[in-house]
Length: 146
Image (cartoon, rainbow, N blue to C red):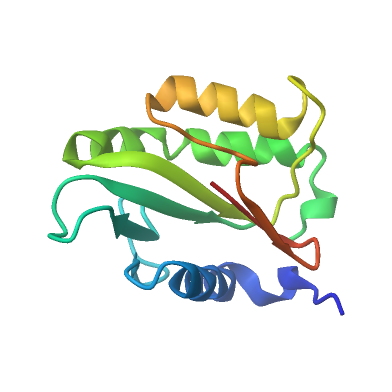
């Protein structure tokens, strides 16, 4: 059964994504919703000491994805607004950026939204962004891309 994820709103959507992340990565550190988070809704340290390298998880939500004329441009614009924050996290140890969104990607080689966003953001960030590398979807509404 599909659930209209858009009915959750941005805060509940972020909490849902954080719950899913907690199931997949028990050591993930989730941050409160609706607060300045410096471009990180959750982080996962890749070592035991919680120092050094970490993955950054960011949640992006659109209330009416089907009403957006170009939802992939919307997503690229939103992430573009996060670039400065992510670039500040890289010297602190960020080595991977993971994006959770309710915007579905397209798979066309080289020109689909997944390949285009992956290429553009990986180049601009200087760290891996694997859009479509690992994809989990629930009712075709939530896409967790890593």
